Image (spheres, rainbow, N blue to C red):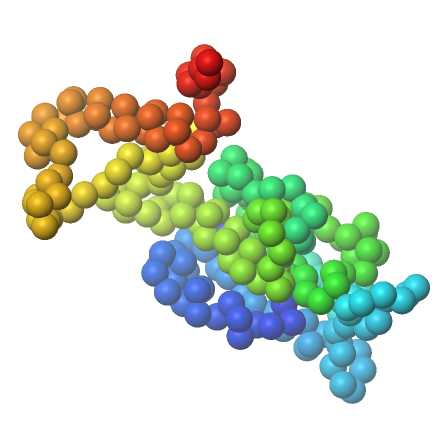
Length: 238
Ligand code: ADE
């Protein structure tokens, strides 16, 4: 799988891509992530990628030309590699659809995803109308730009690609993978400052351990996120 991330702040995304699971997945050749500096596609000598909004108002708007130029270059390069071209162009924006585990799973089946990290007051609407195929938010709060949301999407998708996680880290038991939150986890020592690990986890009885974890997951989900449960599993309030 391949991601191309278009941003006016490439330095902001370098470190997360160069560590841990994201870095390992790239080294193993399971995913390729290329970051593109929008300023390289600016047409004026000041390399300006934003401008004042028509009609007035606060904030600057990302210009259409550099984004079109960058995207068209990515399409041409993909074709030159013998590929069909990007199969999604995602704009990260607080007014997009809220990212969920299901949406991340859907993206993990794609071959080539281009991401646009917005900044300032947003992006010229013509980019959204003509190029963007998906608009995604990572939650109901406003960040300074789309770079962190783009990394969140990449991370959520890459950990689902076959071969990225070892058995020990398997994504199958993550919170949300089957609609429930994850069970509590413990490691050594078995007793820390008078706080013991639940007995069952030391029992070696895998059936009992699995039952305990299922139970904990259901209880935690009922308590914290009843909206994730079937109506029949939700706690009934008097
Ligand atoms: N850009 C700014 N805030 C954002 C958010 N919550 N999700 C996606 N992109 C954003």
